[in-house]
Length: 123
Image 1 (cartoon, one colour):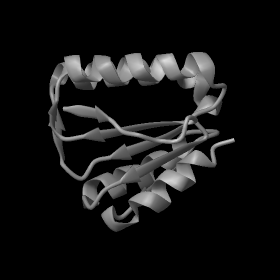
Image 2 (cartoon, one colour):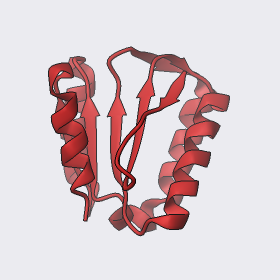
Image 3 (cartoon, one colour):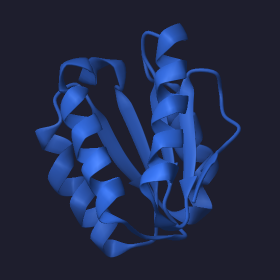
């Protein structure tokens, strides 16, 4: 499941929990595209505390969306990832230098407010 979280206007904020399906992912993309219509740049906040995994369909949709947005990475200057999972932290450290114009940081669960504030500073 993907929940859209309350956030500053310039932040796309989501909580992923359980197993993410293709239908779940479609909702996230629709929300993100709507926000991009009114904002040149967005910070992204993702809470992965209760995230378990995703279906193959959702993974392919994520890959396809990510590849389609490669030319727009400047529009997502900051991504805050809230997690306590070591594999997510490792993946973030690996991906951060590969994403030009995007700064990705992980935050512990007790630092959610700090993560949101940091994402909101996307300029």
